[in-house]
Length: 126
Image 1 (cartoon, rainbow, N blue to C red):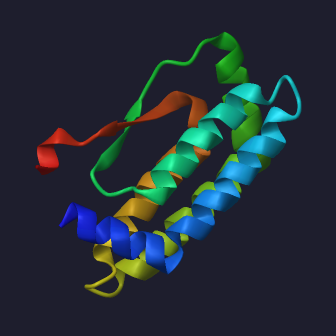
Image 2 (cartoon, rainbow, N blue to C red):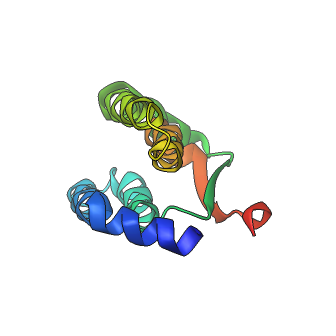
Image 3 (cartoon, rainbow, N blue to C red):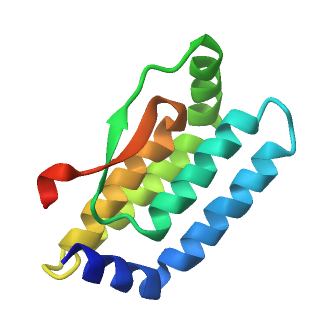
């Protein structure tokens, strides 16, 4: 079921969102201070391309990464997280959209504080 969900995800917009996140990572990497955010956006693009079967886990960022998380959350993260959250809620209104809505909730969790989260395979879903 995980592979089928990922294939549907890629067909119905996942590829486009992955490209957008990858390009955002490139833009962030232009500045030296934005490299940590850019690297996380590359990781996020990989997740957005194939999200089913992965989960977001919290990690403890260093002092500088905590500062970058705060700057990110204030400037960009809150709007991205809100957009993903609202999209997830809209998708969960329909029964067919619930699995896709759950993926958007994962993305909202990551988008708010990217340097405080990581993606791992969800072994409990096998």
